[in-house]
Image (tube, rainbow, N blue to C red; front, side):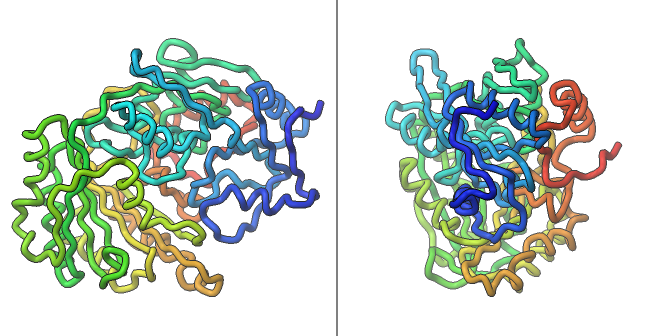
Length: 446
């Protein structure tokens, strides 16, 4: 029976506009689903899963469309667009919330901030919780609170058989384990997340310094050496950009959002920049500036403007500093025009005590973002990030799914034992392979 919700098929007027309308990355597509569907209720989702089964078609899912690789757009698939699942509820007394997959992390965070509450949402405005939480979730205040998926305490999911299940550490624990890290390879439709909340930190804002590219070696060597000693109240990150502060010369922006519980913790967090041995070489420096979430999101989005084509790829690394400096020298020599940039994130993973499929991380995270508008520039920049990371793949220990480009460069994103376990759960929960996996996957290595 045809589901009772809006469906636009490939042959219908407006189909291509509907599909491309799901995409943040505006690169032209060379693949198209059989249909795009807009469920409004859990019953609609269940009916769509069973409908896809009757048609012998695979299913792909879209929550917000910020997948750089457009993972949700698959040839001849039933594309389920969850944009109607955009409601949330906050229980301040219990310090919990529920949220649909199409709730923007920035929307939830802004509301929580008003109530003096906090959740480790993502850094970019418009990124919805569905894909963000499934892939792990690198968050505001992440060094202290961990991955966002570690603050997921339950999910409600429609399975490949059309069952509607609640999953947590005790009930359907296999699906709960899989959901926290499988990313676009998860084999179910999550229609609701149950979230753990935190008190809003007393001090929040940012401190920064900006350096010219002539100081590249000194800046990256300092960042590498200081990284393990940076307090957990700091998100220490650097962006190499062809246009520092939006309109100045190429350089390196050192940005340090801080979330501290006391003045003493704030002072300790600031010290690594205030007392840095290279601070006098910065041509621009700021003291700690108190910033609310709207301002922090505005800063983040200045590097990710809408309406652009993107080529993005990434790696985790703990490679020797001299090799990473060589890598960044080559990047600097051929960095595409703004808004293209390169992120260096100081991560220094803690000991994980959460049972979850997420399992690949390292000291430093590096991600390359090439952004352009003109179609003629696609040939020049369309594989820039991926080509560089292929050349320097020996420096990496894996990737994170947030910035994956698996259709062009399969790379390790789960530990071998976790990938095996995930495959075993998939075989039990989705034996027919109804849900699409990732664009690509590396062989399992022992």
